[in-house]
Image (cartoon, rainbow, N blue to C red; front, side, top):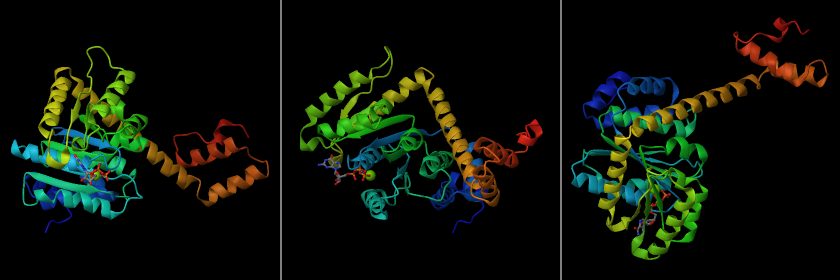
Length: 329
Ligand SMILES: Nc1nc2c(ncn2[C@@H]2O[C@H](COP(=O)(O)OP(=O)(O)OP(=O)(O)O)[C@@H](O)[C@H]2O)c(=O)[nH]1
Ligand SMILES: [Mg+2]
């Protein structure tokens, strides 16, 4: 039974202990001091794994397609980690369970590690827990990490959904392609997938996407997302999809784009942490007795709201000069 010491757990996970890996992910999901300790320790060991995001509207077939990709990768003897991220708090554990059941075919295969994430305890929620969880899998030595996220919510798309290669999945029908476009998914797509090809309507969906891609526009010599047709239920197209991912990876690497992208993602993540921290701090500053006292002064016209805010901020941070020091009283 794995213990709680983050450093020991990381050694065990890196040696292939999957229970230790699971334990580390639980700590990261929960946040708190232990989660922070894990994050600090894994960061220096991460950076080798290639990450592939699989996103799209609910029900497009992301989980089924992820499963098909994993099967294909196992045939190629590739080791792979999978994170199924569900950012919508409205969804119940049942949906997550569905993902687990769909992925159950890989039970007993040590070359696959699958984890669903739906935590709420972490500061910044799943958007910030996801890149940390990816780094845990990375530090544990998994060379490939697939991340399934529902493509809704700006922060989720920007941070949790961000990967080295992003696959956007749509099902046939105008609705899906238009929704993907509205949700900003076409802009982030490196590879587009029209899934459920067994159901028909594929040609129209491919044309819809082609049309919308032309509207988005791409730099000359830039990467234009290929459109891959799949029927994830029977694994059809998984090999073409993987080839497209590998082509994109080669393209990124040949241009030095991979490092640039990763840096942008780390900047976005760091910025988001700062933003959430400040928001948390704002909640603390405006929730106490001192705040009430200042509001009384504002209400009785002795202080204006800006001066009250300055006073609160100065009290919270000694490096900010207090309004009194400015001699305006
Ligand atoms: N006919 C057909 N059905 C599919 C295909 N791929 C997925 N499905 C079905 O579509 C439904 C949704 O598939 P999921 O893989 O759960 O879709 P998802 O995008 O992961 O859904 P959420 O995670 O709930 O957003 C399931 O009933 C799948 O069996 C396909 O290629 N053809
Ligand atoms: Mg799913």
